[in-house]
Amino acid sequence: MTDKPTVLIAEDEETIVESLAFLMEKEGFTVSIATNGQSAIDIISRDIPDMILLDVMMPGRDGFEVARSVRENTATKHIPIMMLTARTREIDRRKGLELGVDDFVTKPFSTRDVVARVKALLGRRT
Image (tube, rainbow, N blue to C red; front, side, top):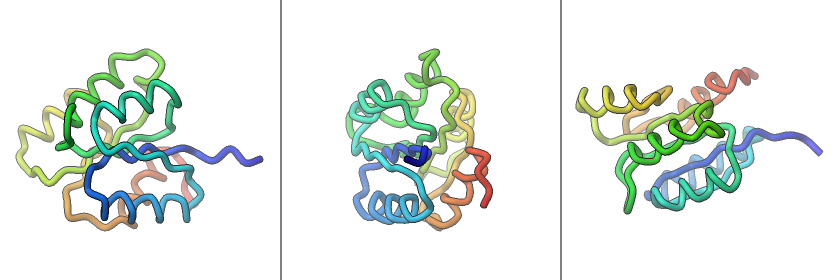
């Protein structure tokens, strides 16, 4: 059995989820999906992922709330977080950085670029 890194995709846009999940799995990652902030928090607490791709604007709890929850928990505070956002305002980026987000990707984005960034954050260069 191989120990594939797990990536949680917390995103409510179905087309983005499908393309990211497809590419991540193709690159050897195990993928779990949350379509709102609360389900992301539930999944993270139940099955700690190696990486989180986190949309800023989601139903229920937004990406900032999820990031805060991850960073406040000693069991999860080490997990790299990449925020996916349509927001380009500097204040949003700064808020994410203050919460300890590791990387920001602005929509629309190249899914291949996201995969490369995930590998870099996980230290898995192929």
